[in-house]
Image (cartoon, rainbow, N blue to C red; front, side, top):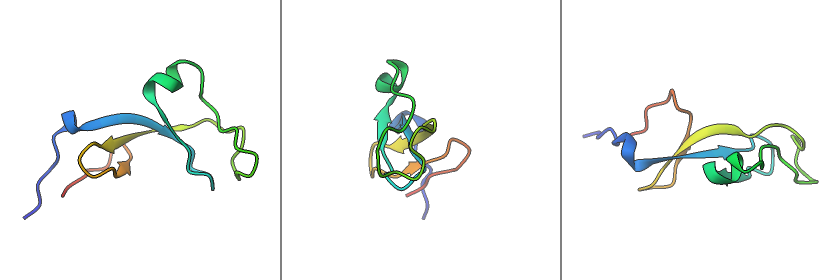
Length: 69
């Protein structure tokens, strides 16, 4: 049986889709940390992308995706 996770269990995070896979909190993003700065990342200097993170299992997914357990 699949159970759809309540949206209250998800937290907004921002991630780098490049090789470093950096993740910053919504608070860090709003404070100005909006671009990847990792020297070895393939997308250094690119904007982080908004995602949701399941607080139960840690999976990071796009807002339009449906996360289930």
